Amino acid sequence: MKKILNILLVIFFFSALIAQKPIKESQSQPIILRNSDSLLGSKTEAGNIREFIGNVVFEQGNVIVRGDRAIHFIDENKAEIFGNVKIFQDDMLLQSDEIHYNGSTGIAKSPKGISIKDKKTILSAEFGEYNTKTQIADFINNVNIADDTVKIKSDSAKYFRNSRISYVYGNVKIEDDSTVIIADIIEYNRNDRQSKAYGNVFIQSKIQRVFLTGDSVMNYPSEKYTIATGKPTLIQIDTLDKRNEVIELTDINPQRNNQPVFFYNRYYAQSENKSIFSFRLDTIIISADTMESFRSGGKELYYFKKNVQFFGSNIKGKADLLIYDRIQDVVELFGNPIVWYDSTQIVGDTLKVQLKNKKINEITALGNAFTASRDDTLNPTRINQIFGQRILIRFENDTINGVFSYGDAKSLYFLRGEESEEGVSRYGCDSLYVEFKDGKAIKIHWLGSVVGEYIPENILFDSPEYYFLPNFIWNDKKPAKKQIKIRFI
Image (spheres, one colour):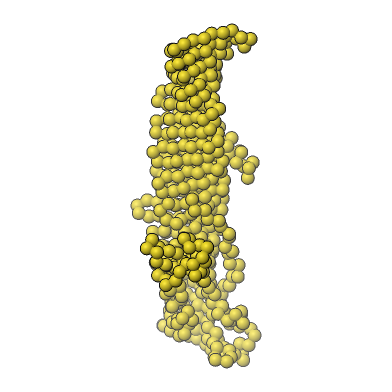
């Protein structure tokens, strides 16, 4: 990974140099004294030296240097300036307590704190240098960059004045009024606010509890478009089922009286008026090879492509393509989609998961739709099945309360009495509806062109697979939820 980041740095800097507006290369100009309260001159083995004290002003081309004291190495065309040093170039101001200036190269170095103000952009660091010819600044240690919209912190930075592009690397943090980004390297363009983050990228929304991780994330604000690559993962955390409690936090954990306490699958916390409330956290996690987001016209769409996996409180799924509409709370899956809800598996050409009040409201399967439920843990081959061109599953309080199948509907349900198995029923019809109570099927309604059969237990015996529906699919390879460390910034 380190080698890749080093290669990226070389590419960034080379690209930035090309993007710079060409600067006419002139021959080195002498450093000219414009003002000083006093002057001392001497000749050493190193050459002629002049020392200036009080209100010192130097000039070289379009560069003006001011300071309290300066030592001018005439033969080397260099100067060391001390005390309240200011360098002006066009509308840029550089400030430091000490500057070593090379008139031949145009480079001003500071060994003890440096800052640059370039229009609305302000840069500062413990050490740094600025090239007055290329108009490129290199800053090191505790780098801070700020303008009217963003703040950036990093270990090092390279700033190109002409293109107004910053390359920052090492423990990088960039934030605006809505988002915080952490990464190993970030390229930020002041002109159009574009940012490109590379290496261990972590993004946190300040508005919602939404997080994004990945190897690289590129954001284009003017186009309201973001693309993330390198196994990006979107995490959304919601608070559910909030209720008041008659309990003291010290009864649960006396060491954490001012912090939420996790106890019996719920979090307990104290409000501003000292009352106690509890809540659950529901998390949606979606990962893929690539993620794209589009935000315009009141819409917020996320496209996850290739090797897609997603997880909810009681749901898992995978597909080749997933589209998440955050405003409408809809998840659509395409390309061999499959969803698991508790012991139920749902497949189809397309799957649609509709959320309501942060809970699953409906799951719709379109085209070759098939649901299978393994409700009997003692007999894993006894799997209840429904087929149709469209299947609708409705939920209430995170529990299935109805299943509808339309178009060439088929069902296969294993029957069980109070003490023993009683065979299986297999039916076909135009449409069907399965009633549920407490999450369990209690009655099936077959509608239109009904045909069916009952296979008694003595015939079924130990070969139930023989009677499975033709389109039967069962997949035990559920995606495993990865450990993701959330950093609240």
